Length: 258
Image (cartoon, rainbow, N blue to C red; front, top):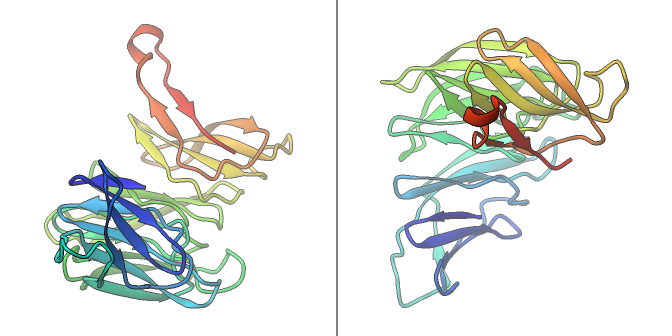
């Protein structure tokens, strides 16, 4: 769920999002269906929410933008229609957007069975109209994470086993200079960027010990893996970073499910 402007936005089944008053949980509106499984995280920015849907490895689904304005306060179940839709074959599985005043940047599945096809797309679109500003069309493997931003670049992982970054033009929203490094294990983990490093979860394969998953640390600029910690399972989540003990101990603390 996501909170903004006194409302909580919740994913429902069959491609719907519901808005509730945060204090009373009274329904305010429910979106039209924009697809099948509503499993992508919701991003809020400047009066709009953004999310995507998934149906199968090849089925066309939508990434969508909705205004959060309650046009009819007398009807708690009014149908909210999308401000824009961006259809894509293969859809959007656990895909979250990075949004600013200029652009919304998000990834897609690769549109085919498996996760090794170089056909996933990184989109940059106008956040209000949905007009495509730019795309990078040759990403290997499904992009199944939230795209995050740091110092002029966006970062994301792929199920095909790549840590990726791309430059974002601050004025136009154009994306370029795709960098990818393979780490020999699939990932759906949203990367956490802090200082000079990128932190994320990966599945089995990165470690010679044959662990079932790994907590991975990579260099922010080169994307090369500099360290990893074996885990008992595959951490598919976005890890939570705490800096609460950094000054007193010199350590960062990360929290994860697996």
